[in-house]
Image (cartoon, rainbow, N blue to C red; front, side, top):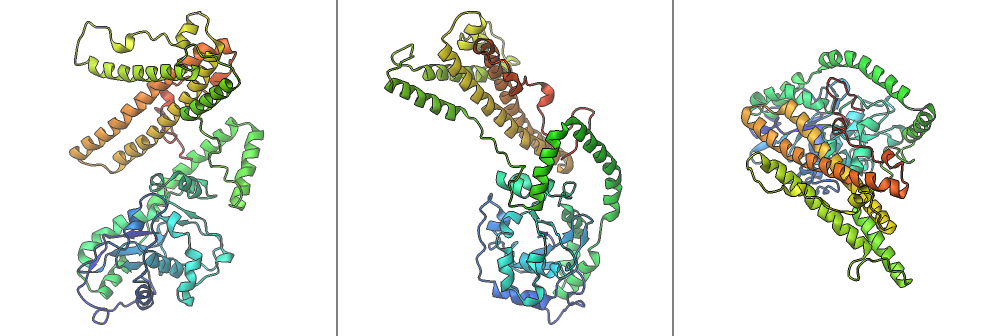
Length: 477
């Protein structure tokens, strides 16, 4: 489902002077019934988005419609084959209002009586689907359908999903719906690209003539899809077999049961949601301060200085190391432009706790444990930041490759991507620096298996999950 505001129509004529040859027999729905419903909902205020700030939802009542009989059209297609559904296209009077979309959806469902399962893809599905079944009672009975006899998962197309909050990215992902992972949900955009050239000749037409012409232009892109799908089918089969061979059969069986249980009943725990609580430096610092306060109440004081607690001492050292890393980035970037005889700031040796232990000198075990906990949390924070920077980089590079044209636009997109690359490089350097601290403390604290959780970061690791390695192929799933 989607709306197209390019296929607008000026207020040039009327239904009486220029009526359509079709009364809902093709793609456009029957106009009079549609108009009566919209008139009844003309004063209804659109519910605001509780996800991200979706202009589609929040500005649906404010779109300028001056001088226009229709600000665009909404439509419903088969996203697998890019075929427009019958009685599924209708005019929009303002923005992408729920009343218009509801009527189109219910009208289309009349032609799907024998279909038991329908996956409904819409870029604002998280908001629109909330009260859909309750809303049906407000519309004419001839477009009602039995909701309890159908399975209706609602999903968000793959291009739009990254703009939604994290909860939507697991609850409305096509990748997690059985039988839908290879579908992008964006096929209707291809249909719009074929329809848009007709806009320049239809926007001056009367309402009936315009609907007749657009009815003739709605058509499939099935052949192109088949030419792409047939060779990719073989590659995905090979990838799936490799995946099965790489995982122990017991783990695969347990995981398969979790997924199949959730697919059969979505009220059961979603196996794709992140369950682990993220360890942060802030939470560890709070834990240490509470522990030190408790020890002081018990008469235990392990401080090396009357004004500085052990936790504060190690925390200050870690903050100083962070400044050291930031200065390293600045020194490297300035090195190409300036030459100085002074020692670079980042080359000055910081005799922090891990450096002391690595040099073979003894150190307080309590301080070593505090340092270990804080470095453990810092590593989590740094990897989380690296992951968050890699996500937009993958999106931006893919968008640039597919959509950006022209020298000026390419330069602008390069600048944006370079900004993200700087953040990725900073997070990588920070992790590598943080990683050296537990490497030095591991022997002293007998934590010899810590590299299982925090392996050494290699250059080939720093890429998005859907980003292919050099010379390799990648499966999105």
